[in-house]
Length: 90
Ligand SMILES: [Zn+2]
Image 1: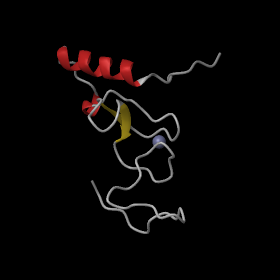
Image 2 (image 1 turned 135 degrees about the vertical axis):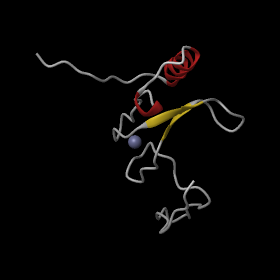
Image 3 (image 1 turned 30 degrees about the vertical axis):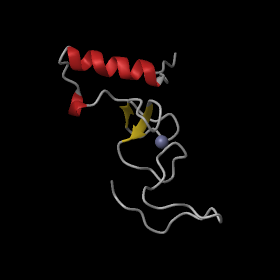
């Protein structure tokens, strides 16, 4: 019988888990709790609510092929909707 080892959780629960892990000084592999993007499966981290945006997940490494990954910073997309040729790190 197949059994899933993964599920999707919301950002509020993920932040709570992160805070509990920190409070208990839990040791996790490579210092990461193992959150993954439901679209591409790559590692993500939690980002708390800020003045600019609500709480959300961020990819540890930007994935330009994933619709849920951050768009490149410092580059604005033109009206043509073309992707920028280069991307700055950050
Ligand atoms: Zn993704």
